[in-house]
Image (cartoon, rainbow, N blue to C red; front, side):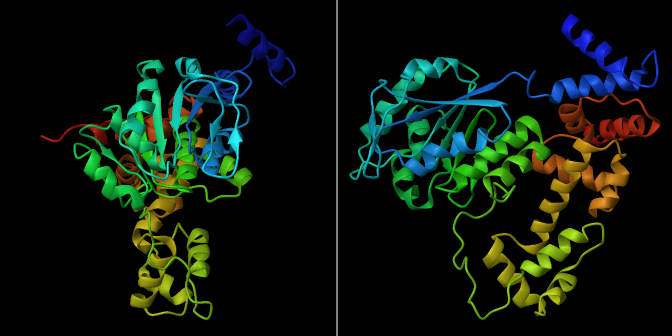
Length: 373
């Protein structure tokens, strides 16, 4: 605490006014909370097994490693020895299963054995005994088989690679499997679909931990889309339109520049010179979501950015992103991430409600959260 106060004073004496205002202190404290140098580093431990897919194994380090020092990623094996990958090489790691005891998050990437044996995920699940209670556990692709074998998914929603759903249901009927989504977040246990969905779930975790601004920065560094809804379909039947056909990218770009307007399907279709029916079909083929659902997703994401980076009242943010009012924004934000705008802003800005507008937002948030009669 003495170090923090000294830092406040050293910054304050260089400013134009003394003594510094409460707003100045609030700003310094907010910067302190957001400074990677003083944020507790989150330790991610990735468990590699024989037959691991190199692409999926590297995703956590690539994504979390782009978060400016907010995460430390280490890789371990069940016995500290090298493991064969499903490619033409093996890998050597520096850690055995004891590393799992130090994890804040454990990630289980997929593995391929050629001939599936039910005992394989059981053997891997036994090593999860090293994991401390309350640790966040994530599987990507067929890593969900390990979590299911450990009983962590019993009675819960989960997903895995769509190609493995038949075997998964046969082995683990007690799990509520949803093969049609990119990832499922059940709190401390998350499961994702195959391959690129591992990137989506890792970005989702960065967003949960540090907000949209940091997650978007990480996505730019990794040159990937910053957000794909976890409920988006895994498998799109026609992901690439015919080369001679029009696509909907121009309409999407136009919509992002005009989110503050009450956009309709007709407006979007007109930007692509298509009928509404053709546009809706082609949009779903290219994006995996309906135009309406995609618009809501973009508006919520823009609102999250404004909540993190500005002190604008909720009603004003709602207008800027195209919601009918603050109530509509609160409902959609709560549906997307389960919190109110005020709670979200406090999490990622640490700013108390000092203005009349902020106090009014707090009252509205409280009213929105009250159960009905």
